[in-house]
Length: 174
Image (cartoon, rainbow, N blue to C red; front, side, top):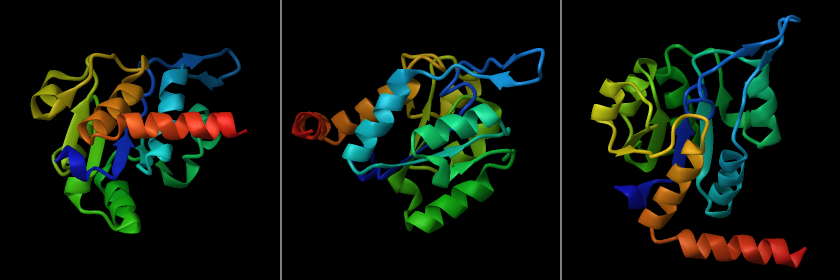
């Protein structure tokens, strides 16, 4: 099952962040994202694993971070029904359900978690989400969950060292 994974879709709040919202007196929303997860986006790209994002709520902070990571083309926000964007992504990339991993943490993620080949959750996910996930990270939301998942998949596919070597070659070429 893990050998088939070609796409990782992730939730935002509670996975890429700790789920907290910081609202300034000016009404601007701030979120804390982990640089570990940002680095893992690059690792996944080196390994030719696609990445997409589906969030139940819209946030300018999410838009900004996804643009910075080069994920804005496959970033869907304000999607309480996550099946619709999930199917759009799946069809656009021409993938079967068993070629997709999804990382979620809360009840809103369950419909997608039930469809994918590799359902994954963060350590602090809702207990029901943990029950249906095939892998639960040691990390809590906002503390490197995505990084842990990328490494788990690459190691499971026997491609971690190969990807690491590709990254080294790319860095030292410059």
